[in-house]
Image 1 (cartoon, rainbow, N blue to C red):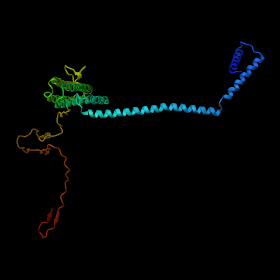
Image 2 (cartoon, rainbow, N blue to C red):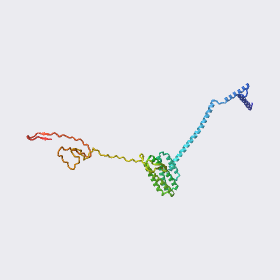
Image 3 (spheres, rainbow, N blue to C red):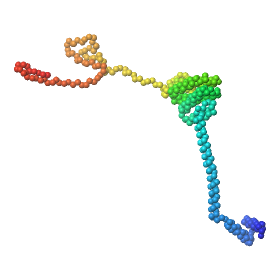
Image 4 (cartoon, rainbow, N blue to C red):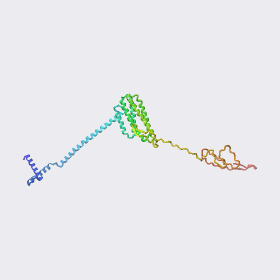
Length: 360
């Protein structure tokens, strides 16, 4: 039988077996036995071609090894990417640190000046105390004045002056606004005095630079000095209202809280209120027990009025007792002790007829 004939016969037998299973055809005994033999042969053929236990274990180990390699490859790639990213970050930080160091002396108009301002902004972001932030703003504003002085020495273009003065006013407004808000809430005449002195110094420094700056930038210098004069006036007005119940109007402008106007009703609980010094009142009258040098104890026999002349002894009667007049200060004298006179020594007369000799 050729292969096609065998294949056709096996296919026909398979179809007939399926019909028998489905119940669409009734089998006879010979056909049924033939089909059962066919199924048994197929099972034996399948069992004979199945791999043994050792082969199956080898195949399983091979598959597990290939899967482990497939998973290890992405991990190695992930570690490589992470190492590359860390190296890139370290490089960026190193370059950033070097750039910040180089931008320390940058002036307005220089390419590194923007990096310098970014570093100052980062420093402000890392400062959480409001008073320290205000001091940093004022410090940066003072740095701008120093940079403007350097620009006048180098003969920089007008645009550089505009940039420096604009940044100066920005930091000035921010620092004054934060500091006046703190003073309004917590008090502090000393801080206002320091701010007023600082503003006067910066105005004097800018005044020395006006004549050396380009003519186009002098109006900006004048504007900055006017702003500094407003700061001085603001500190003076706030300082005069710190002892009042109403310090501000409740509104604010570019320099912070606006001082209130009108009569000042003093608040004794204000930390800036100055209390009058405590003085002790003198006693209303001197102690009556302290005698005066001219006072004489009253007596029924002697007139208490001060005599105008020498006292004459009384003509009759017992003279009054003599009372010692105390001095202006009272001192406690130690008790006086009296000693009895020594006994008399009598010596009999040496010569009869003479009186005895008495010693003592």
